Image (cartoon, rainbow, N blue to C red; front, side):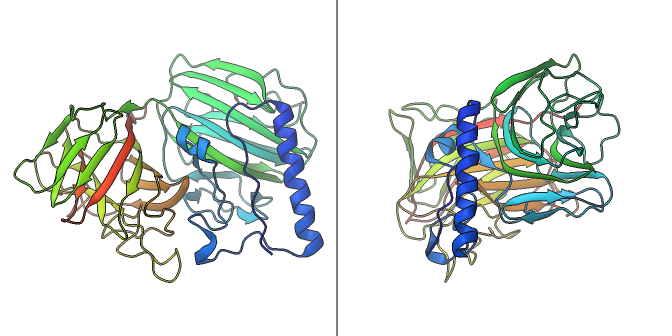
Length: 417
């Protein structure tokens, strides 16, 4: 028998809904213990996400991605020698050198939702817009503290910046943070209640998200993020903002409901705008079995398929961790997708995060790639590291190409202050 994971709600849900979710999770854990069932077995026929943490359809449509897949620390790096690990679907730490476990990706404006449980008397925190090794929480990051009430900055406070109005939660139970960070304005909800609003007169523009070991035992789960500040790239009935190459065989057309059709090939459709560090989100429909396409970025303007390529290819061999031809979300000729999280003939969500020399892709909310370009600098990203801004290109690979795109948008990630 296989247990189906209970979906967890996102956003600023009320405390009642949080309590219901926590109770349901506890009840499910009891079933697992009573009957000796497994919640982590993944098979090729388990569906696109297997037993990884799944987001609901409405959450995906709103733009949420999972920063923690419930099974591994993929996409995270420890900045100190601490015993960070995955334990029963949580990220857990209880010993070692104090420091952060941080996302390899950096983000700008976003909503963040997570749950935490700290043993009584423990000291931890969630770091926002942080470098891997922050030195001054009042200057180089926003440290959302997890600490006892006698601490000068108890749980839900920003260390060195502002104390929260939260009640004492030093009880060893699960609690939830919901954070909205937009420019220098940050709001924090604890278990659904607004407990802190802070405005930074000198706002930090971007950074990693970090989980801290300071002292004691702490666990985290259901860590999800929704980027903000998107600019739409598709306009109803128009290819405005895009450059077409009429000498190529591909056909590109935008419907009255802003759905882009890509047929035939080869060919490419190129943005007039250019971006260096950014987040791109879109929905994709592959209308054929095992068709090949891709999204190129930091492309050399006006040149054909000369950029980094985030692959679109939903075929896999005997299991979804065996992608064909790099796999959707992989970086072509650089890093294969670790899991094929999408299917042909079904709309799927794709989010691409690019900052400095690091890039990652989420498919249907699951992070499937995480690559750092360590090559020598080169103006052509096919040959080396390109940090310069470039265009975004949609690929029409060959005469069999038949794809649709919708809800495509980009959010720029500004230079870090």
